[in-house]
Each structure stands twice: as C-alpha cells, then as structure tokens.
Image (cartoon, rainbow, N blue to C red; front, side):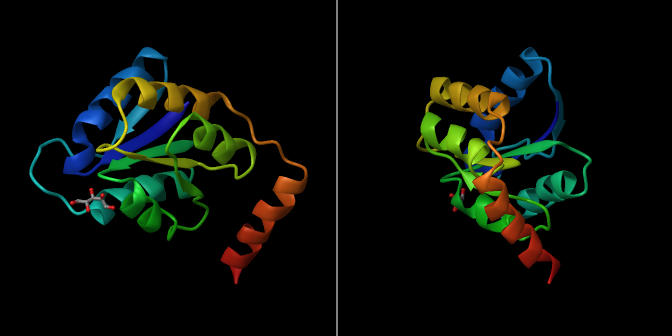
Length: 146
Ligand code: RB5
C-alpha cells in the first residue's frame, strides 16, 4: 500500500519508527517530514499528507503530533479525508470498520512505540464493514459536495 506519513516535532521519533515499521511490512512510504526536532506547525504537515490522500496519490495517511488532535482537525478540512485520532487498538480498528478512516492520527507524547506498531498493523489490516456504516459515511461525502 502507498502510505503518506508526516509529523510535527513532537511526533518525530514516533514517525521515524512508523516509517521503518511500514517499510519492513512492505509498504511504500511517502515521508512528508518533519525531519528535524525544530518546532514546526502541524497544519504545515497535515495539509500535504491529507492532500495526497484526498487526491489519490496515497491510499492512506498517518499523521503524528503531540496529541494527534491538531493533525486530525487540520486533515479533516481536506475533501475526501476521514482522519481519525486513534488512542488504542480498539479505536484503530473501529475507525476502519465503522468510519472507513483513510488517515490515522496518533499521539507521539502519549503512546508507546509497541502500541503504535500494533495500532498501525490493525488499522492497515481492518476492512470497512460497509452496510449501515456506508450509509453514514455517504452522508459525510454528500455534505462535502455542497
Ligand atoms: C505542539 O506543541 C502541539 O500543540 C502539537 O504537537 C499537537 O499536540 C497539537 O494538537
């Protein structure tokens, strides 16, 4: 799978781990930075990653900041993006099966590396359930078209 990845300074070390995990799993990674510990504003990374997902250049995106919240707020402004702040294995799974999330937002400050690896694997492997959930996601798509 082609996956766009990005973080701010607070998510940098977690992003580096995610990039190597994804590469080891055989995915193609597009790394939108940041690459240094100097402070960077999360929207400056969230928008390029979300745009890559929204326009089809990447199938999925993973964004990491201190909490995962700023990244998700910014990414959800991009048409076609369903960015979910995920906190554990359950939210990683349900964001896929119920919400068809195409961008996962993680906290670099609050989550450990082992948990992040597990969440990423679950999120990539879990299919969308469709059915009643498709009706709900379609309502979001319809709203976006207005
Ligand atoms: C940066 O200080 C911090 O605000 C950012 O990483 C993120 O947590 C925002 O939601």
